[in-house]
Length: 149
Figure 1 (cartoon, rainbow, N blue to C red):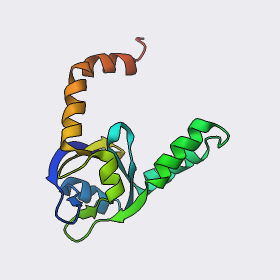
Figure 2 (figure 1 turned 180 degrees about the vertical axis):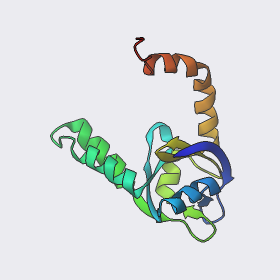
Figure 3 (figure 1 turned 60 degrees about the horizontal axis):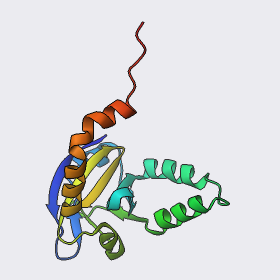
Figure 4 (figure 1 turned 180 degrees about the horizontal axis):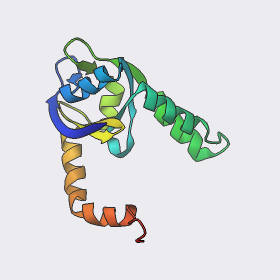
């Protein structure tokens, strides 16, 4: 659903423009509201409402008696807020999420199938640099071939 890498800059009110391609997907699927929260690897996760509800159910079903589940849910859900694009296609990034992701001015907005991720430019460049040479080995570890007939 969401694919690609897009470079943007926060405006003076801490708003970032959502790429036009992603806004078209919102429009095609009648999405007006979506959710932004702390992601993994110091980025921000952005989910459309349908995907958010599925993730929420999955995490809600984790046993609250397990310490790791409580900690994760606290961090994930306490950072969440719902957002709507303004007429120029921008969303406001709350200061606590900006701080979490190390976002100052320049951001990279990437599509990761069913979610959007927002990275500080520096964090994305570091992540990419550290992992680009592992792409093939990651594929070998994660993707199994279909059995031959």
